[in-house]
Length: 139
Image (tube, rainbow, N blue to C red):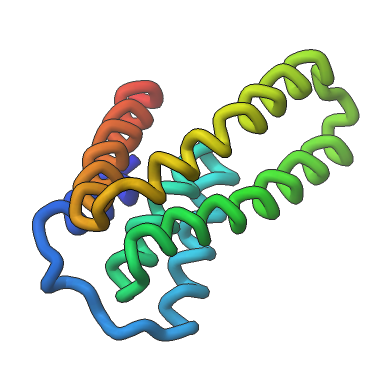
């Protein structure tokens, strides 16, 4: 929660915090996002998206990169859980997957049509909301 709140606030308050892109920064951001996802079940998207923006990647590209990378992280997390636990409610998983499949094209069109500055603020605000909710839920 704290990481997501901090990254959301940074994206909102300052475009001057954008640094030059480097692969090592993206690896660190990816590890933080993945660890956050593994521990809490959420937070990967806000960490990766805001981290990419703060690393100098365009807002729309940041959202797109996050969407693709989260698919891989979610699949690996699901398979690990399946191996360790052995049980998954496939009816719920199928229903949620259908919702994602139906919403994704609409979300892509919305992101495509938004101005980068507005998208940046939206991502930051949503990160603040998600981070705050996560902290509220666990404390």
